[in-house]
Length: 488
Ligand SMILES: Cc1cc2nc3c(=O)[nH]c(=O)nc-3n(C[C@H](O)[C@H](O)[C@H](O)COP(=O)(O)OP(=O)(O)OC[C@H]3O[C@@H](n4cnc5c(N)ncnc54)[C@H](O)[C@@H]3O)c2cc1C
Image 1 (cartoon, rainbow, N blue to C red):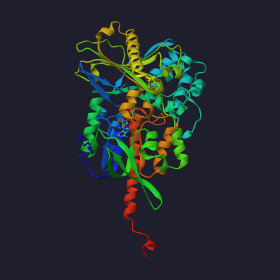
Image 2: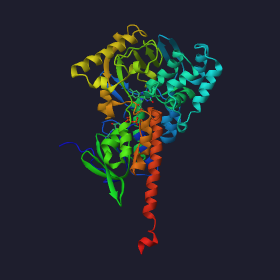
Image 3: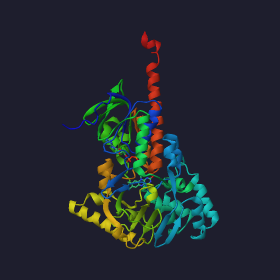
Image 4: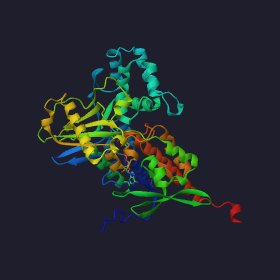
């Protein structure tokens, strides 16, 4: 008989959280700390969503998305998780760019970028200062129609090299392009510029274990291997609201749902567009899915070491920055994340993860044989590229493996295997959800801004606060005496 992964759960919860990405985990934790009864359901056998890792023969541990995040993670970890988690966040100082236009190393913060823009790129200090100040002041509510490309051209006309320096890392961080609204670039870039790039010492496995322990301390019921198939909607007195979920074939009642599943999947599949106004359903259908990622994992044999070549290396053979080239099936642009023993102190192990942006369709249309062949090509190209930095590197590697947008789709159920959620319009649709269907909330990668570790954690907090207010209002309404007229 199949194992019952829901064995022992209650029939009713205040909130069911669908998915254990960083937004789902954080939302669940905040709600539990507010005293809400929370059930967290994850379809994978591991928590974390894209904030994940895997182990392989030979003692290898590969981190998927631990390349770097802004300093704001320290505050968010302390406020919404624990001091212990916050204390393990440390800075990465060796960020490198190697491309036909420049070869630079930086700490990736405003001070060092200012220095490089003035000394290396010969931009006037007044322009640099103005650029950073204006960017910092950018606001989501300004409704500025300018694109990132237009904005960069305004400050640095005709300077392809400067635009590449400023934009390429952000394109890797959130899949944004020069055609996306400038705000999506401005917010994320400014977050990094405030103090550089940070990582979690101990690895993703330790972070997620600590988060899981904290969730349990706060009373969250966690179940893995559970697919939520449907959100249950009920109607009374002409008003619809969320009343539960169907998961692994079982109905679980709840007052609110926090979906960490992809926003389009949430609306069009889990709930069903018949429960929304036709205008809203059309808006949801029109939301564009963002692009995805490929990765190549290179495990260094036990006992071998590699020299310090930097933590994060943006390498490209493309003559200039092109948003199209970055996602091309044969892109010549990739980022190496080099994990030294300090990532997991005491481990004495090294791994290299190479990330490339990619399009789902390019990988989805391949036959099984082509798929294997193209993955082997990615691995080979990555090793050849890495050997430019570490000659003889190939001989040190005893594990190679590649992941594609199809891998992401398989493990996270994300619409078209997206690793970066949706384009800008997805944010409005996500935020509008509870107004359309009371009790239904979403948190996770949307709108480019709300993606990445920091963006999704913070979005989880926002959604949890909204749910808490909704539950409070419902309790108050239920406790209120009936109006005199209704009683007579
Ligand atoms: C290759 C790569 C590298 C990255 N590098 C970085 C980086 O260096 N720094 C950074 O800040 N960010 C990085 N990111 C982005 C970052 O990992 C994500 O933005 C963030 O982790 C997404 O969190 P989320 O809360 O949106 O949910 P996700 O991580 O997308 O998780 C959603 C979860 O919901 C579950 N789920 C979905 N549907 C259901 C269902 N019906 N029932 C049950 N469970 C369901 C999924 O299984 C999944 O666990 C990277 C991403 C990728 C792919």
